Image (cartoon, rainbow, N blue to C red; front, side):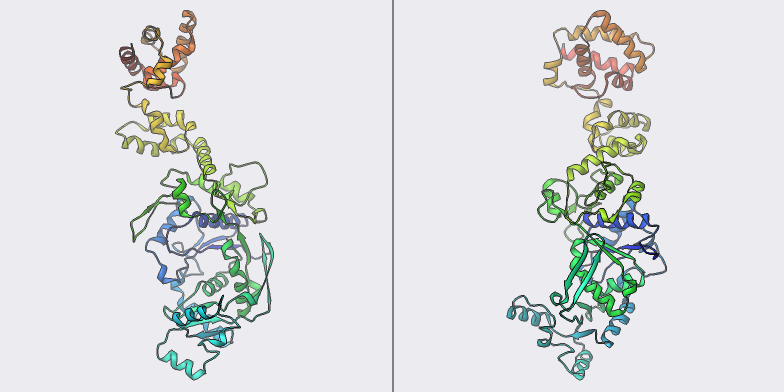
Length: 505
């Protein structure tokens, strides 16, 4: 690290929902910034007006609010380097486009899409570069008067970066080490379009990073081919001293490791690939989200952090503060990270297990209301405490614990056949009398009296407990029997036992 203040940015395009791979990229930026006492900046790259999707920007901001990864500066927050939407920075970019043109480092091209398609048909593997630019309609092949005349006529044009061939471009990547690419394989990228008076990603990205004093660019591996171009642009502007350090993260791969993770993988295997549920404004199609699927945000953050990075220890459960303290870009993998969605479910189970019962209760109360149950937060919280060790998602509570709130009307045939003996009705009638005579219905007192009675009668504990569970629950599930009876209360326990004796006989 140098003395330069760490400033990183997450700069998505508002073209739809935020992919979980983008969330991981933002998370790594956040961890790096916080570890070094730096700034985490939110920028919207909306220069591609044709791909803009209404609601996408708001969706992205809400996702980070839910995840608990706040930005220090940017869209919706403010700061002294704004505006932070690229569409609001047109005048800024135009100044730098004009500078490159004036210095002969860029040129104007009038080629139509049809002309470009024709050239691609004519020349195999065509790209607009030093070997082909002389065959095209641009300010390098046209006279100054012709160029001015075409612009005056309102002909649409683009500004292309002039790349000189045969030059080795060195990118020092914090994850991948030294990456060297020859400029001859690069094409003269479009930097600006007259059609909408907006720059492309490449120019806007460089200008914004420079003016916003970005110290490190931490982004996905898919942007690695752009890095040499960005280095050349920094040089063209004379900004080598302020060029950020690059770090290109490994891809998130399909669960089987074969190819990049896509929404289709989630649809096929039943897991979300977006942080929040997304409704397509054009089609109305709904895509699932981690929030709506019942994941805890802390679990999602922990899970994502370990996809492509690990702290070098066996520890898997790490709080956000622990992740900040231990994060190290040099420990990021160069290879792609397989998206183990089953492990994601395990993380959610662990975080539920370690969560405060009261924090989980509101979500459980929603489920109870959907099933027509009105109960106090206190009773709902007791059930959460008893049952949360058995679930990976709060939504799984209801089928496991509805017996706490609804008396059985039928008894599981398989369990009854196995657990209800010829003598069970008689034993349950006796146990019912024991329970009826209890003045203290606490778990401890119940257990002491009932276990004493079993010993005195020389009954088998398994016979009693299994049959008793069937009377109260209707099947062979649930926590410790005295926890169930204590929750139900003495009167409800006796009612359920009487009903079961009558039905099961």
